[in-house]
Amino acid sequence: MLPAPAQGALAVECRVQDTELGSALTAALDDEPTRAAVVAERAVLATLEAGCSAPVGALADVVSDLDDDGKAVDRLSLRAVVGTIDGALLRASVTGDMDDAEKLGAALAAELLDMGGLDALPRNAGSGVPR
Image 1: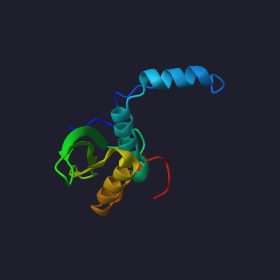
Image 2: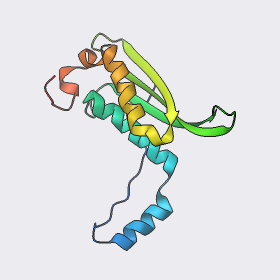
Image 3: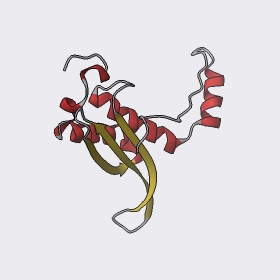
C-alpha cells in the first residue's frame, strides 16, 4: 500500500522579509533527497489533477544505482497507484535522476492516465477541475 503523496514531509515557514532566517533554516533543514521525493510525488497529483481525497498513492525513494560507467549514483525511484471506481488498482513506477523529480512525477502520472487513470478517478475526488 502506498501513502498519499507527500505524506510525512515537514515544512517550516517564515516571513518573506526574514531572508537571513530563511537562508539559515534552508541551510540547516533542507534535505535534497526528501525535497526531490516530495516534488516527484506532488507532480503525480498535479498531473492527475487529483485532490487530497482522490484514491491516489505515491512514494518516492532514493536508491543506489549504477551509471553507464558502473559508478554508484543516487537515483529517484517513484511508484504510484490509482484506485478505480470498480475497485481495480492501476500501478506504475519509474526511476530517474533526482534532478528530474518533477518530470519523473509528471511522466508517471501520464502513464497512469494512458492506462485509464483519469476515467478511473471518481468525479468528486479530483481538484474540482472539469474533466
